[in-house]
Length: 98
Image 1 (cartoon, helix red, strand yellow):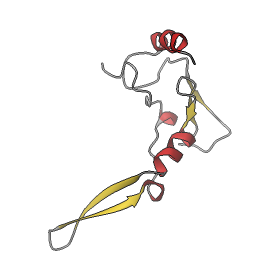
Image 2 (cartoon, rainbow, N blue to C red; image 1 turned 120 degrees about the vertical axis):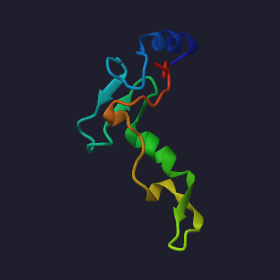
Image 3 (cartoon, rainbow, N blue to C red; image 1 turned 45 degrees about the vertical axis):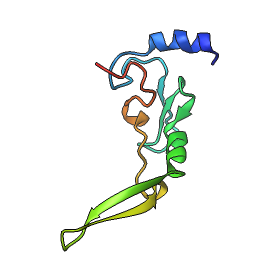
Image 4 (tube, helix red, strand yellow; image 1 turned 180 degrees about the vertical axis):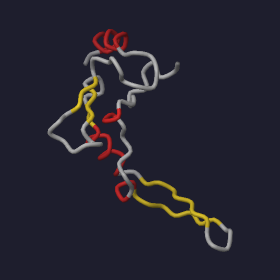
């Protein structure tokens, strides 16, 4: 999408946290549940966003039995997927406020 197309497209995206009524939000029924959302505005699906996130590291802090805290670095790929296009949550953050 060029700049003009993106400007026009942004006007079609509804306000709020969800994609309800958004013409760019689709469900790809050929993909597994909870990883089948697609946004044509972003030109990405849950599977794309989860793959990008999986390459990142995350700090995980856990409370130990003695009451102390331990921080470790883990890969997102070892954690559950976090993209929520499948659930209708916006991942573009356009008009994200109320």
